[in-house]
Image 1: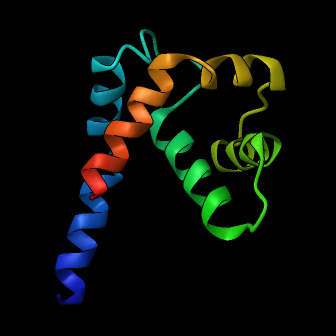
Image 2: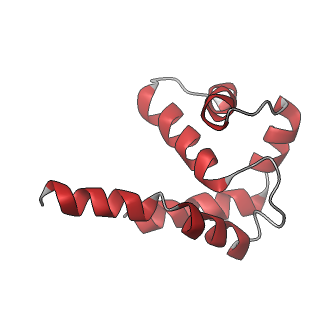
Length: 97
């Protein structure tokens, strides 16, 4: 596999419009508010990929760094504990596989 094909596949996986549409389809996002599906996926991938012992606080911290927005821990946690969030992430990782 050459670098161009790999780059195209990564760009397809992290396409902001497709991720937003998928989040809406899975009913994770109903209105565009503080949680952005692309930035959430990037923060989860970064936390789990770069740290040996990542936890929810690390994901929250990464999300704030990536998005440049301050979001309190409790509302962030409430969004992630939704069943729809796990369905959205499951679909994202199925697309990767």
